[in-house]
Image 1 (cartoon, one colour):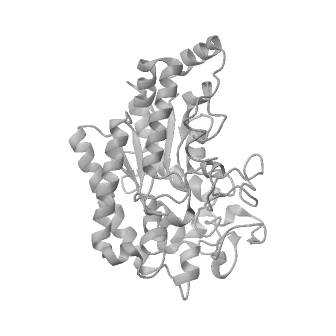
Image 2: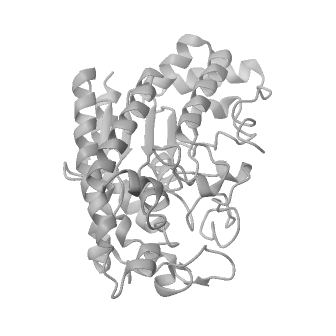
Image 3: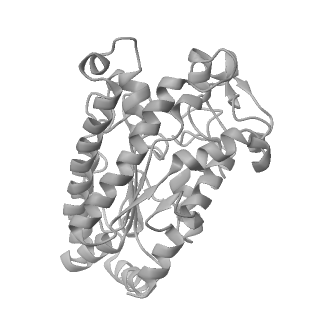
Length: 370
């Protein structure tokens, strides 16, 4: 299925009386809010299954610890970050925007627009072929809003979006699948890293401004993780298990500038719309002290091959660890479900070094009063 179908196509609605009853219950519960997800493979829950792309996780052993024990398109052994946030909020997980099941009552839960391989820039991830670039994700969000408006009326649809929680995760691929993908990449010839990072930040700002203009009012924006420490980079760049210096420098430049840009946006908007989630710090805690979090290693991926199990894709031919809970990384690039749970705990309860200007628990408390 191409990205022009599925998410934006009309699907039959449930009986109108049942939908009205659901809508009354939905809007009558203070803690119930829609959830929207944008970004890359860290948060994609199956959109790429519907696309002709090489960036996919729809075969075993992906999903080995998912409730169905089947691959779903999540780049995880089990649940990913949006799933765990939904779980913590007492909501069912959002469906991929391309899923044919996203219709009727399911629309009111929210939707996941993320697509593995994408970045802030349109030329990021071109090697993966057909993926939903971030501009297209926002186009789908616009079409989603039209569908919801037709379903429950324009005023309630606007309220649903304004009160929703939004998660967006971008940036890592702009380094690992663009700037540093090959020696002398087009972007590395165009920019030094101290020039490239402000360029990325300025482009990200445009994306976030568009998200705000589309009605988003509570947006958690994750920084990039310690991209030089993932098993894939250790396998390619490390001699003795040390993190890749150039990638770590890039992340160290990107994250503070992202936080600063979000603060400036909030100041202009005179509201705490954008929340910076410092997933770099959250990762670093268990990367440098894995035993404190119950991991035996933060260097070797559970599923993969070659040094640190960091080469190639995770497939049925890969090495596979028997206990995923003691590995910080599931595959060469992505955290295990256990690590994802630690990250989500940081999002909910993290101090200012992890969440700025507030954590998700504080957001929920504040929003429950309005």
